[in-house]
Length: 56
Image 1: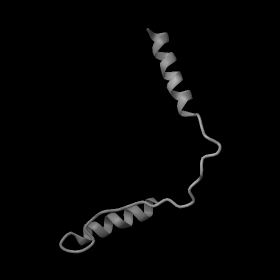
Image 2 (image 1 turned 30 degrees about the horizontal axis):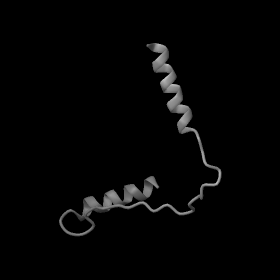
Image 3 (image 1 turned 180 degrees about the horizontal axis):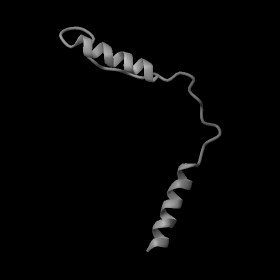
Image 4 (image 1 turned 120 degrees about the vertical axis):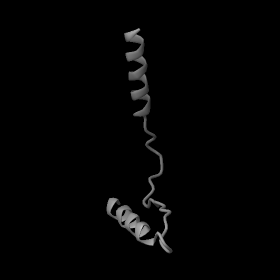
């Protein structure tokens, strides 16, 4: 049983490593943020936006 589990885990890892050399590479990645930027919760939303910008 341990051999079967190990074999399946190895197969899963190796199958995820396959790459397509002709795949197009995107030069721009857009990240969306949705939060309260105006109104009563604007201070919380502005803090979240600053956190997102800092993380990127």
